[in-house]
Length: 325
Image (cartoon, rainbow, N blue to C red; front, side, top):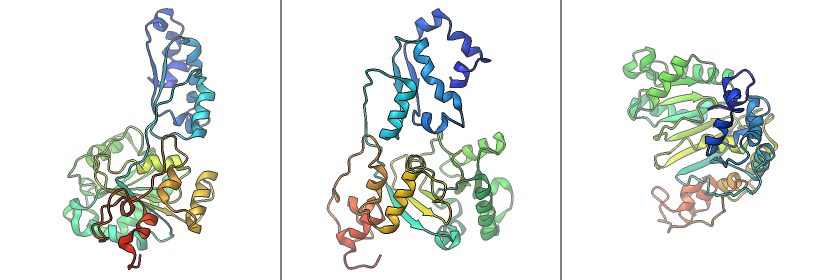
């Protein structure tokens, strides 16, 4: 049940809140994706900011808050909105060690991703399943058109230029529901015709596609939490996956201070590990020394955690000692 259904004055849900019978039979109130209370509660869906009102309607009912990404700042915000005395917290690490991380400043999409477009040309439906996250609808449309123009007939199965044969898809909240449903249904198939989706944050919560191989961010994310949520779309079946973060000119101007500081540290090279820099602010994460498994001394097939962590750790692995990155 949505917050709007329960709390909006014009909704039928508001009426049942005042029913004593209803109040007595509710045994638990669960709020999933609790981190969005901070990011959605003030502007996008303001009713989220009013979820604390449920405490007065259900004073004896336990509340369960669930989220995979929570910082101390978000936790304070949640508690200020929901007012949970005697809060008990159970945490687990938000790390996704099967996802290799890279960061880079860049301005040329085709220079950076030519290898990916070549893979789509040569392998078609066998190419790695990839998401490119962009920061706005207009930017997404431009990237989509540029990639289609670059690939031309190779953007389509058997080079037949019909919509259902396209290896490239655009996904954002401004599209018709039938188009969004088609894209989700198609890309969820292991042998999907769609191998590359250009998407906004609309491709997020509630979407579980297990076999995404590659996440690419083209432009800076608003926050570290947003970044990690989107990285988490990769490798959900446990497969090895990659997340490539390209910060483009100008994209850093309107992001959170936390994200600006992260990018500044990466640009200066003052961080020893990209993963630790991202996750250190999350509740439940503990920075661990690497490697945890022996280095094979062969960078092409090394399985130690240092090689499989991030681009910075990979450079420092003993197997890279005599090689140029």
